[in-house]
Image (tube, rainbow, N blue to C red; front, side):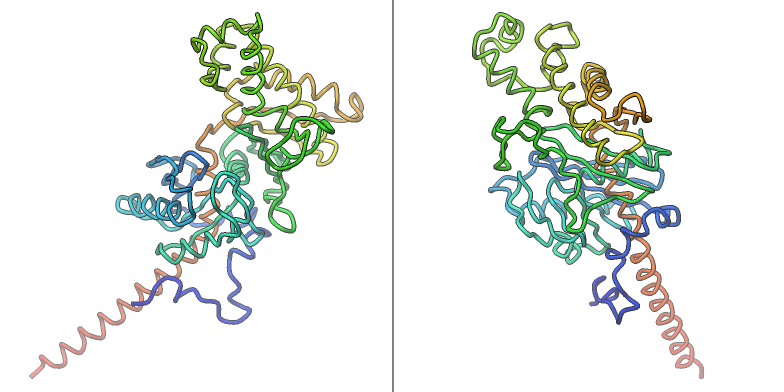
Length: 382
């Protein structure tokens, strides 16, 4: 039996793959892409989220599971993705699958070059999954897919030059210009979290010191709170009492919750994180000059406790302040589902391949049925 891959094998230069050309045609193509359901997958170090998304960005059904262990090997993660897609396909007419991966994805959007929380090293994720699924597969960095979703359906609608910053365990990012995701020559643009902001500063897992994400991220927030609690600082008594002395139980969401309840130390920590966020944004504005910065990721749940100080610091550190237009800084609207929604919407750009192949298969089947019926009629005629 022929597979989807058999029907879509390239034939000469005229059949260059859609995935190689889609990057330069995104703005035009997303307007003409088929309005069909697609599946978006968001893969992180702790969870895999999958959902069926329609052409308007609405989530029709969503499944979520923990990222499988066993050293999080490529095979077990790929098995999990395939199971989720097949489960959703039982109830929905799925036409393509988009995957947002927390890692570096090559320019062809096939291989995950490196994933910090998974055992993916130059892993041909798209080819492996498209060989197991009956629909086209698109792979991209999760920050790129989140930025695309915010541009299409969220806080970035109507913006021609947008930068997305995702604050979670670390800092991720993405750049959109004129409706195209800027991935760079090798596909790894947008790794803003590893800009050096403090020479010789805190050691970063990337191997360098003083990276931006060591001062403005979920890890930085938790590290500062735990250090104050471990030092038995008087300002930390509130959070120490909250965790009953178990300093290892301090988390980012807990700090945000206590800050909302008025805990002075937690408010100050979020202000510090926000100020470093504003410094980094000012640096990005000097380099990229976007019209809008969209702040997403789990830490952005602190909202104005974080983004207010970021706006203030941005204005203080912006090059040419007072003599240039200032970019807007806004919180993302789509929440933790942004990466999944964006991956599904980007997958619609390659869904037309599946529709054409499926239509050809149906046409061949109908021709065969007409032929067999004609043959039977001839044989039955006396």
